[in-house]
Length: 347
Ligand SMILES: [Zn+2]
Image (cartoon, rainbow, N blue to C red; front, side, top):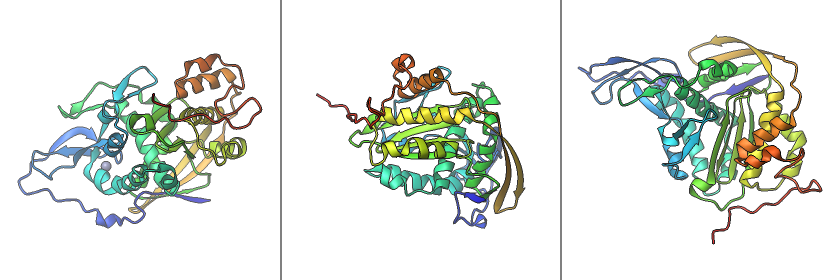
């Protein structure tokens, strides 16, 4: 099986020429490395010289669309940060030449008045790259925080051990710069795109949650689209969703709590399994070919308490931890889909 994860399919690598710095520009080595290509960055006081740029992990268009200027993201360890303050060092070509085309396609879908029908038209590769960029950007920002005012590293926030279960996804980041060819396995990520009830605007129309224990995963709600990405589960959740949940919500629009419950259940399902990934890399200027061999580890047992803790965390409804097994926002007592009102009525 051959699969592609590739941002700039149409980009000719020769198009991206190293910009020659203006004559007399003084370039200064920094300790910052590009979070995508890992190149050491050089800055300059001269305009258009050097390659030191900052990348907004949550892009500015997203912050503006959902009025997140003052909104904060809470990290599982109790720390928090404003969305717009999560910045990582990035080289000029990765930022402007490679990531921009993917970012543009995503932003066009998310800025549409009705996001879901536009978002489902995006390629799986674009969705995967965008999701990996966000979660890897957050992890990079926490592991190796960078002070953009003083141009030097800040003290480390969390251990880089969290990257151990994310090594393979990091290789997929090359998809921004090159064509990534995968062989020998299912698609490495599970991606679910779900319709959300319309009517909310601004911050009420947005939600973001991630999970960095096994498995690494994110869920983002943006207007009428709910987007779930689970990294390195090798499509286990996509299969689970098809057999266990798709029929229930067919043709329905979800309340945000229902969306986050599905995300929590998906994270739990992915967490029951794990894989050992062996990866051989062959690289040319244009392509990265990854040959994967996957060994499936023995599954963990389902744990209703752990599942309810996940649902409580994802929905923000702490009372869920104490609910009876089988409790769900998704179903009525007879097992049919439960309709919930959204957005809340404002008196
Ligand atoms: Zn770079």
